[in-house]
Length: 302
Image 1: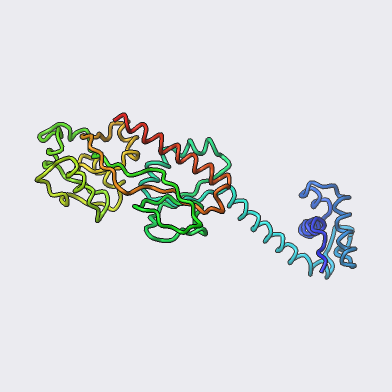
Image 2: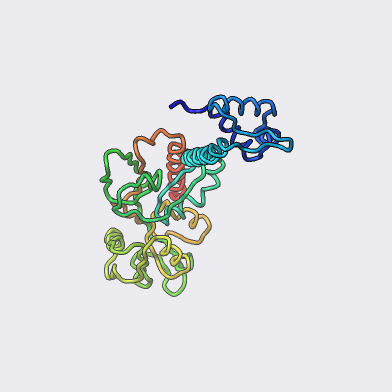
């Protein structure tokens, strides 16, 4: 079946809403004559009058009333679908663990917004663990893992390999038991940034420290909590060096020893091949890589 002329149908909906060609013309930024011609075109298409012209304005005929509601609802559905598509192009949904979000994204968010004001960033700060990539929920994901083992239809890029250093409050560098050598950790609380990880055991062995129980201390669910505890002087934690740049610059944290534990763990940026060339994906990918690289470069000065 041949569809009615959509421009004429759109004008008809406006005229039916206002029951006035003049007000419809104002709403659509047309002339009254143009509105009248569009309505006439539609009436010729259906072969029946759609309005009754009265001295005080317009009234819909029975045929006009039958057409008005489905036409209005159809344009509303089209508008909603267009808005969803527009938001999908301008909105950028990124799933990221809480600590990288706090350490990499949020402090540098004004920079991204100034470079790309056309995109609205939606952060989904949840851990992914072993869940498959979900295109319906997000466009990109930042995932920490030891070895990338993902679907071949996904593009995976390493953006930061894990390099752990001890960090603590400057207050622990002095006092009754100042931190001068790694062995001095025996007098302080070990803060564990993740559960079920042996990073303190591995770091102590790398630093040549003995006589310290690597499982002692306080364990947290995320690095962010351990960093807050360390800044408050509660103990010493291991931290990804690129995530503590701001704390080091502001003097909230210091690195007491220069032993660096490089693990098999890394943070990866993940997105589908089919979206790889979208401007919003390329914009965020390039910005994130530059941001993390800048943080790692700055951290080398401490």
